[in-house]
Structures are given as C-alpha cells and as structure tokens.
Amino acid sequence: MILPKVRDPRFTTIRRGGTLTDADHRLLALWAAECAEHVLHLFEAARPEDPRPREAIAHARAWVRGEVAMMRARAAGGHAMGAARELRGAARHAAYAAGQAGAVAHVAAHELGAAAYAIKAARAAEGESAGRRECRWQREQLPPEIRELVLDDQRLRNDICWSVFTP
Image (cartoon, rainbow, N blue to C red; front, top):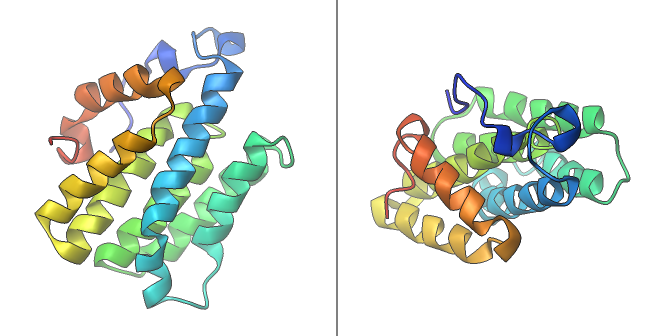
C-alpha cells in the first residue's frame, strides 16, 4: 500500500476541501509522468509490443493540457497496471510506475507511487545504488513550486513506500 490511511489535505484540491491548487496538481502529474517515463525502457525491453504503460504516461500529460478527462487518464493508468500483473522485477515496477502516473489525475497522492515504483524498477534492474541515483534524479526534476511538498511527502510516506526515498 502506498497511500496513507488518512488523506493528506495538501494532496486534495481546494474545491474538494483540501489545499492543493489545480496548478500544483498538474505539476505533480507532470513530475510523476517524468519519473515513470525515465524507467519505461525497462518495461518496453520486456514487452515492446504492449503500449499500455506509454499510453498511461501520455494520458497523464494530456490530462495536464486539458485534452482528456480525469476518468480517461485514470483508466489508462489502470490499463498500465494490468500490463504489470503478469511480469516480475524491473519491467513490472516500471509498468506500475506508469499506472500510478496515470492515476495522479484522479488522486494527486499517486505522484509518490509513480516515483517509488520507478525507484524499485531501477533497483531491480541495476541494484541498490541505481535506486539511489534514480531518487536523486527524480528530486532534481522537481519544479520549485512543489519541491517541498513532495520532499515532505517522501519523508512521511517513506515507510509505506518500501523505504525507497532514503538517500
């Protein structure tokens, strides 16, 4: 499980009673898509004929641009997770990262799932040091507007995210 039992209001949009702006929600989705895309090659090496994870990342970005509805982005994320189910190791984690990225349109807190699964994919492919490099790379990609929010979220949810955010 990568979502906390109690939702953090910082990841709930203002219109739903939280404090997250739509602009920051979109930035979280873009960052999650970047994290997932960075390891997508690990899935595509195993299943080059399966477009579902790449499509989930594309739908996340399309949602940010206002080109697809939230439900469509979320559904694409679910299809990417379906692609992961029959796999193991790096390919499986990379597909889950893409699925989580697609789900950010629905629940912003899935942003950390995309990042955590991407780190797990790097670890599975190349070992612990690759996971640490992936974590550092992800942090370098964080837009300043959401940097502190995500870093705090990593600190708070590190334990339920397989401790992947420990530098």
